[in-house]
Every structure is written in structure tokens, then in C-alpha cells.
Image 1 (cartoon, rainbow, N blue to C red):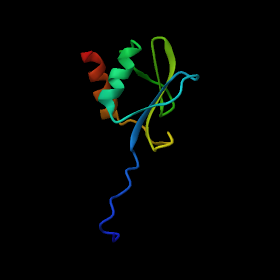
Image 2: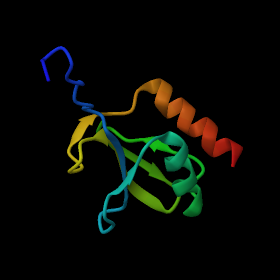
Image 3: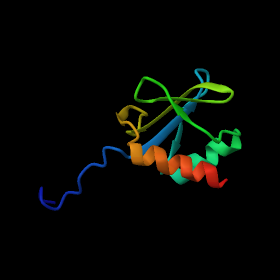
Length: 93
């Protein structure tokens, strides 16, 4: 396979979420799945904290959320548009 034929590596492969310090990271394909997961824990409003990967919600003072690689290493934070879309999905549920 030539270099031209190789598919680019998908750097932002997975969306990772961890509720609190003691939980393990959960891996998702996209924001719709994340919204379903958060609603299971009665999380309907997210607030951004100072760190680019951290949020909080009622009952959960620390929620880690980011796009990352296969090993849950962050590759980028949510964009403003993604945060808005996620909140819109939570509002629908």
C-alpha cells in the first residue's frame, strides 16, 4: 500500500467520560451515546470547570470528558459547538 492509499490515523477516535475520581473511563463513539450515559446518572446540566477537560454537575463535582486515543489519552477538548450540542441532547431527555 502506497502512502497515498493509507488512511489517516483518526486522532480523536473515541470520546471518553469519567464520573468522579473513583470511576473508570467509559468509551463512546459520539455525543449521542454520551448524553444517554449521563442521563442514566440523572445528569441533565453540565457546567465547565477551569481545566479544559473537566465539568461538574449536580451530585458530580468532577466529570472528565474529552476526545482521545485508544488508551484514553486526551487528544482534544470539546469544542463550544460540541458542548452546546451535548447540552441540547441532555435537554431533550
